[in-house]
Every structure is written in C-alpha cells, then in structure tokens.
Length: 162
View 1: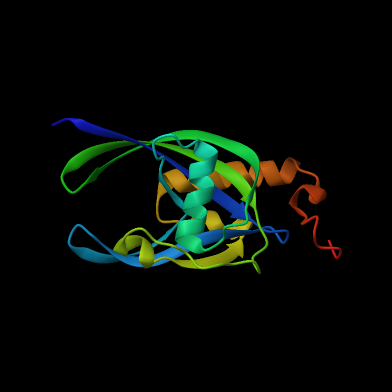
View 2 (view 1 turned 90 degrees about the horizontal axis):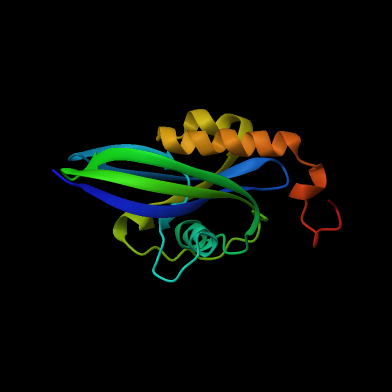
C-alpha cells in the first residue's frame, strides 16, 4: 500500500495573557464519535506560502483573522492511517499573536471544520489538553519561545493598556 504525502501549515496563536487558542470538536473517527482538542491547521493551497496558509486556516477554523506571525516554530513529520490509507503529513507551524476580543466569523470549508469551537487556555496547560502528539510538540516549542521572549513581544501595539 502506498503512502499519501500532504503538506499542512498552522498556527499556535497566543494572546498577551499567554493563553493559546485551541479548537474543540466532536467528530467521527474509525466509525466512532470522539472528542478532539487541536491546533488550527490545514492544507497548503497551490501558489500559497506556508505563512499565508497558516493565517488563512486560523481564520477559517476559528474566526480569528487578525493574526501576526511572531516566530517560525519549524516542521514536524506525522504518520498515521486515515480511511485505510497511510498518510505522511509534513506539518509547519508558526507562532502567532492576536487579540481574543477581535473574533470574526469563521468560514469552515467542510462539515468537520464547522464543528470546531475555539477556546482560550493557559499556554502552560495546553499541551496535556491536545489530542494529537505532533501538536503537543509545537506547544512545547511555543512555550520555549515565550520563556525566552521579551514581554513586549506579546503586547498589542494598538492597546495603550499593555
């Protein structure tokens, strides 16, 4: 059986309170309903940069369209079976910041995406909440970046209270 290779990009989106945006949903996997908590991500479209894809996917899946990329969190390879096929997925994530009060309407592209409900949780507790190991790896990278960063790196320049 061959392998299907796909490329996706996504975002670890944080706010100035060091909370991270996660997506929660109930979805059918292997003929069973499961509860997932995950990061926003999706397929890179033809002619689209990884950065453009990551920001588009965050907006489509969560409604947070006003994001700023503040770091490249790198790549990771994820291998799994889906509907009887072996999938090899190259995942590229970016650390982004946004104002959680500036949510617009999401624009899901399929029924599964329409099930997403955005939640904000402390960055420190996000890793254990996530369903998939590959996404936990990117949360760890984001935590390391935040530890090393200047607090002003997370502030919103349009907010005088920061």
